[in-house]
Image (tube, rainbow, N blue to C red):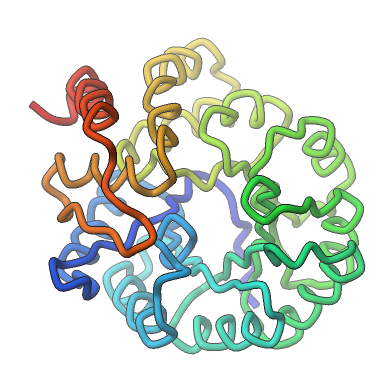
Length: 297
């Protein structure tokens, strides 16, 4: 297993589609190069921001292979590979490792609402099936249930390749507990862009970011400034991006961010159902903010 600690600025990468709804491979390669140029530390294809529920197993493999090929050794590739049936999650994890992923992001089982022991058993099976680092993804707002700090820490202590957690909540008491009691080699990352500054002030290791799709350089800079303890400059960036963070969730992610990238000339504005285009009034708000940030004319 790679001993490289999972830290810094990670992008939850969108999946670009063509008009016929197939994966736009050329646009996908452009996005990876965009992140390499911006200094993003980790690229995460096939996560929920990548519309993973709508991807076939073959598409997941192909996307990971393309991203890995384009990334080379310039940026770490941590692929989304999770679902709510443990056997299927194990298969996705094995496929991602075979496709070249250097780490995995595995979402906590959603809808089933397992007990804490159920969460533990789910991840223990995945950890036993692959050799690459696993990022546990706790996102109660989407899954319907919370993995407790105790369960996450138990996994971190019991499995060497459970290397990090993406804590996508604003449960600050849980975040503080994770940061205080984690093993030294275990990373705690936020999945909430508006919380990067306070999260890292508490000792967090970085972010898995939606806004990094649009402003990768500034997200990397914000993380770096917080790591260096430069609170004043970090506040300036945080304030500049505050409204963008909010607008990215004006409708379901990744709809606003994919619309943004289409305006920026990076991808076509294509979604797979059940996601649909932004309402017109919300498009205007997003476009206005992108203009104010100098991202579009």
